[in-house]
Length: 421
Image 1 (spheres, rainbow, N blue to C red):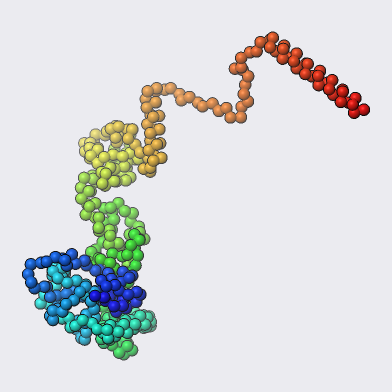
Image 2 (cartoon, rainbow, N blue to C red):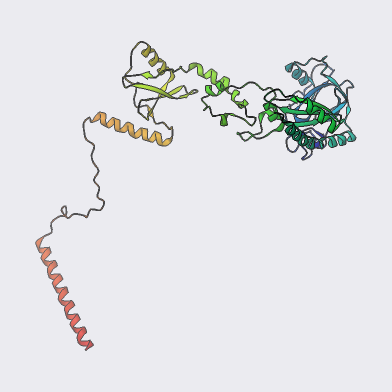
């Protein structure tokens, strides 16, 4: 069953229509949607769970009792009860998965929050809802002007009208408590509606507005994330990330929620990594920690005044720490000094490393032997010192031939002058 136009409030947009499965062409109706993986299974028992999950504008969801046992499908528009009047939403989930979602969110079946589904929405209901949605944008702009006139320190992010056009919910965010009693009086008298002010966090505001993250995908809070857990800078430290607020902050201005996704994996891997609070002491000198590869369990150190980094395994670091605790200093960080790498791990660095190893081997095999200097032949004229000497007879023959050629040339010149006269 189709859900009609997107302007009915399923996705909160006014662009494009919805398909037969209730999904919007722009992807708005699929916002915070759940896949019914039990839909094609025959579950034991003949009775179907009669509580249905209904989705409203901005991804807000509620649970309503299908007391009339209506045959509904995902994406169907329905008229549901409200605290005062009625509202229109769309079916997002049915069956046993609704029971699991209610247990997850700690919503009881006999709770007062679980209201009833009145009827499937008709074409007239959807037309009224479209007219109501058209009021939201002008109302939000006008309310922002009033907030500016009253000099209130709050940010209005969205307005949602009820389908019966009797109530409007204003979503705002603020750092401190706001006295908006005067604002409610002005809004109620100007728009002739009942006003409800609802404060939301900055993460919830980003989820309602939506956007594209630094990863190039839609924001997690606007597509699937519903539970916002606290994120601290310790999560960035455990993952060896630079504490740059511009890179760690999301669209909401808070730390990115994705910092918690891989945190447990890093914490498990850090168990085998030793804590290096002070430099390692060797006979060569003190070595300071520069970099840690948590998953490869490799640590990089460098001596004072050197740019070369020495890669050491975590086990070797523990050995040196135990030796330093006993006032024993090893000759070097590595047992084999040939395993050094440059600061930048690249193909060029590995090639330089190989050449350096060859040079060290030559010095060990031939200690004290000076390196041969290369002779530069650039700009020097070739010398005739190494040419083999010629025989005198061959030189005399060459001189005779040159004399004959010269005498022949003189005769030709004389003949030409006579002819010209």
